[in-house]
Image (cartoon, rainbow, N blue to C red; front, side, top):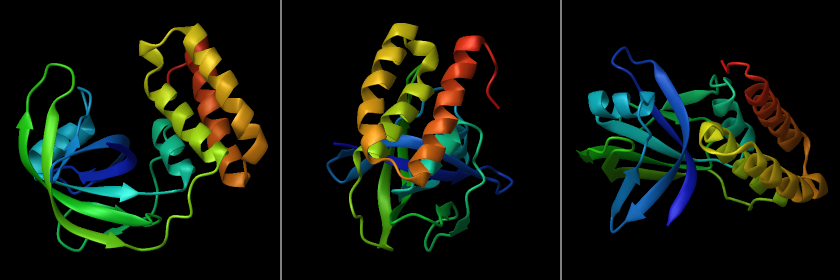
Amino acid sequence: MIQETIVTTHDMDGQPHLAPMGIHYEDNALIILPFKPSSTLDNLRDSHVAVINYCDDVRVFAGCLTGRRDWPLRAAEKVSAPVLACALAHTEVEVLRIEEHPVRPKVICSMVHQVTHAPFQGFNRAQFAVLEAAILVSRLTLLTPEKIANEIAYLRIGFNKTAGAREHEAWAWLMTAIDNFTKGVTQP
């Protein structure tokens, strides 16, 4: 199973880093698979801890991919990595080992502490569309322009039916990122 989350880590100077990532679950371990190069991977190698944040505010996912990483954080209870303040729940983890790979190392983590802050009310279709569009934005260099256009056209159907203010804001950030990419404009 893969769950779309926000992974928070910190560098050697204690500076936080947020990254949207699909976390894999195998047996009793959580597996983080960052692509190289990756600040998340560097931070996991240095600090050996992270927080897996479960969040329903899709602006955080879209924001992290479009240069908006300044989301409120707070201290975790058992590890030094921060918790996303708007997380509905979070899991604090420690790195058990890293299985090297030239493209996408496998970081196997154990759960240290789990907390639920608020109930998850479910995603509407617009939130799902924003998450899928965010995944597309994270892979723009890997996909053809036709694939991107087709996926966005399909996602826009559900988005237009159910989007609220948060989803509109996040969608606009992602569409700007796609437009800038197609025009050759570098992202922040």
